[in-house]
Structure formats: C-alpha cells, structure tokens
Length: 241
Image (cartoon, rainbow, N blue to C red; front, side):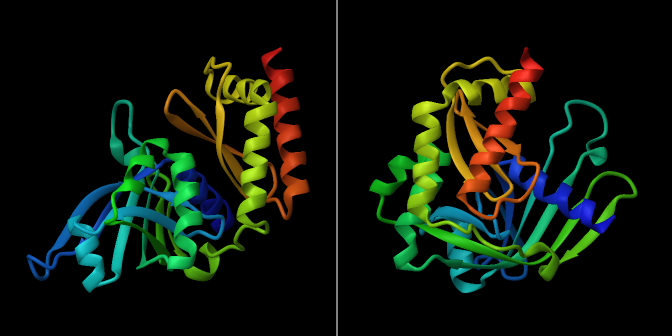
C-alpha cells in the first residue's frame, strides 16, 4: 500500500507544474510566507525553482533554507478535499555555479517563457531536497513518506544525452507524440514537442502546456527510454486506430 502511495504521489508531482511555496518570513518573524512557483522535477525526487533574488521567498530562503511546497489536483466541481495533494518539506539551497546553466536549460525547455529570465542577472536556480513528504490521495488515504522512500536514483544519463533524446523526438517523431496526446488526453495537435525526459516518464508540450506521460517501468539507460517511447507509440497507435 505504501508502494502504491509513493507511485501516486510521484505521478501527482510530475503531472502538475506549479505549487504553493511556504517559507519562513523574515519581515514578519514567526509567520509563514506563501508564494506560487513553477517547478522542475528531477528523477531523484528533487525539485528546482527559478527565482529572482528580489522575490520575497528568495530573501526568506537566503536566511532560512527550510521550506515546503504543496501541489494539488484542482477539483472541477464538488469537494476539493476528495482530490489528491502532496506537501514536500525540506531544505532549499542555490544550485552551484557549475550546475546553473545545465539546470536552467532544462527549465527553459519545459517552460519556454522563462527564456527571458536569463537576461535578468538576479535570477538563479534553487534546489529543494525533501526531508519528509505528506501525501493525501483522498479521504482515508493519508501517508507520511520518508526521505529514504522518496529519494530515488538520478538520471543515469548526462545532460547532452538527454538533450539529444529530446531533439531527436522533436525532429523525427512528432507524429508519435501526437498519437500519445490523443490517446492519453484526447488532444489533437500535429506539432507537439517533447519538453523533458525522466527515468519514469516524459513531458510532451502542446499549446503552451506540459503533459506528463508515465513509462511502464523505470528506465535504467537511454536504450530503455527508446524502448519505452516505442511501446507508448505502439499502444497509442492501436488505441487511436
């Protein structure tokens, strides 16, 4: 049951792209401060935020690195409490200068509008490492997930390999991604793009929105990713046909 909760929590995290950040207010000592931010997922369970130094939550984190982020599925109607939500509690630190450019490029690929942030010298990437995770899948489905459960291996490929995989899909396999979008989300788009690849799935972009599609199994290498994408394409082709 915990294994299923962990899977559902990770899928909820991947499927959303924005969360409510809570930091310790420096202006109002003792009070939490809430803000909203997009985030970038890593396969290992870490999250990345591209934040301006002048933002209040960035100033707060500079003094106290403890924070949380809450991500939830918005109810279309009815009781919001029946929807899944997750709160990740942990510590946030700026990404090292050696890693900044690579992480920013991944972020911009997923959120193209953030390209303009690169021209502002006060933006930097922050990384949140989870200490504990609270997952609620609805009434009676409540779990604390511990750090050793949440933490997973990072991508077993380098940034260049990931970029090559994404570019290959965008240059040669838009038709396959169109089929996947149609099958999973009933979206018609003949020119979608891939926004990123993790060990357990991929992001496909359509009309300025990211859609998460999970792989059947966690990938251990680029060959596994290729096989997973072929399998998704075959399933989508059969379903759409």
